[in-house]
Amino acid sequence: MELPDIDAALRERFGLSAFRGPQREVIEAFVAGRDVLLTMPTGAGKSLCYQLPAVVLGGLTLVVSPLIALMQDQVDALRRKGVRAAFVNSSLDATQRRERLEAAARGKLELLYVTPERFRSADFEEFLPRLRIVRMAVDEAHCVSQWGHDFRPDYSRLGEYRARIGRPPTIALTATATPKVAADIVGMLALHEPLIVRTGIERPELFLGVTKVELAEEKVPLLAERVRSIDGPGIVYSTLIRDLEALHVELKRSGIDTLVYHGKLSPQERRKMQARFMASERDVVLATNAFGMGVDKEDIRFVLHAQIPRTLEAWTQEVGRAGRDGRPAWCELCYFEEDLAIQQGFVEWANPSREYLLHVYETLRAWGERVQAKELDDLRDELLIKNRADNRVSICLKWLEVLGVLEGSFETHDLRLVRELDPAQLPESVGSVDKRRSDLEGLLAMARFAGGAEECRRATIARHFGLAEPDGPCAACDVCIKASTWRNAHLVERPTTLAAPLASEPQWRRGDWVRVNHRHLGQIVKVEGEGRRVRLTVESTSDLQRRTVDPRRDHVERV
Image 1 (cartoon, helix red, strand yellow):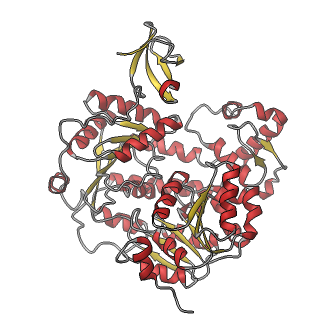
Image 2 (cartoon, helix red, strand yellow):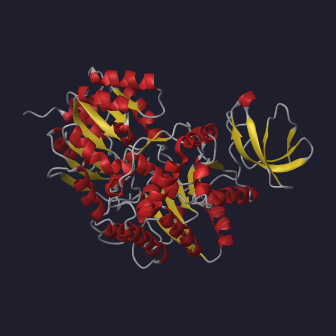
Image 3 (cartoon, helix red, strand yellow):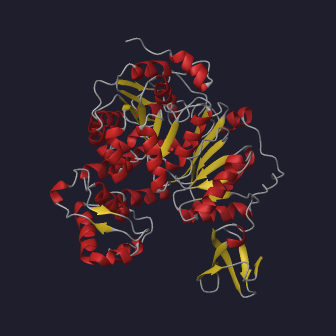
């Protein structure tokens, strides 16, 4: 069979003149019908390796991705290139989903993006026999493996789903996979004699460094100095929301205004924060690790970590969001050894035991029909969960969904048990002692990376991922070159005059101190709605009570 002209498609459909790195080898293999496992750095061009084959082959390429926030951007970008693409996920209503699935069934689409949860939905299952799926792409493929840093139960069934659609040639893509995770991806997806291409995790334009502090109080001056010394947009990651908010206040006292992004913000606030950051040339956003997955911004000049991530895989993925334009960017971890305790807690809370999952199930069953009047917090209270970071309940609920025991959600008040749970049906990974040990070993590897500075950072990373180590000093990490020397040679200092705020900046922002009705002094902790419909949640300093405030009816003044 004669292969399509991929060079012509590259020029005519994607406007590119040449392939980068291993793209040609991977695309030729995938077009020829071979399974592929590809690991490449964030921003290095993995998506082209399934998008180009989709436009030169007949039929439909099904793309499985967990990133709902990114699907819209990817589809919009493809449509601007004339590629017939669409996505189907929970952000659409039932009518919109059916319209797009109908278009796919009629052969009107070349690419269809879905989340793995779609395979459990009735409307998608109804259309599956009509979809002529000729290729399958699994993005963020490390989510398949229980040994990966972001294991997701729905991903664990993708091998089963792939078999259901006839095992089409499949490409699995990820930026981070150790040899153990790579082998697990191949096994879990049942890839047949795949082409395996694994390139370096980091990029040469990124400076990699770690600065150890002995006291928590040393963090803010260090981070403030870095923000002032590097011009351009940047991200500062923190693990805990409360620490993120405290950092926002402390930096503001230092004369540095920042955006804030985390899960407790309203959807409107998150959209505004992301839109402002995407449009900015100098804004700095303080964020939990949820920020960045749906952000494709090329000119991020620095990524700082105020707290240690749980794994080296997570750190490399997050720093990979810097410098996608090919220009120098600064990546640094502010390491305070006591922060390891935070991540140890997360490891425990990410690994509920089998007994714990059965306890969640029995509690829901005992509630009966009353479950539809309950909230998630009611279940957490019933199970004596007091720490908001304890994620065991949510993980157990997800497993019950994946196993077909549970349908609906607390948010929509339609949660219900649809069948009994047989403990024998629980996957081995649930409550696995080996998985917990593996997670702790991942944290230990991250701690050793942060605490040691005896060899090139890139050499340590390459060895961790089972890749070829650099021949000599990289000249772009804090072991191979003095950090200030590299920074002075490659980066521009931030101007002392702050950029004017964008016109779209909201009137009220989280963190503002206000006085309500001339009585209550407090801080805004949430902003919901827009324009005349805006509502503020203000935490009073006198009694720590949170009050919902309508600025149209209540007198609200900044202090």
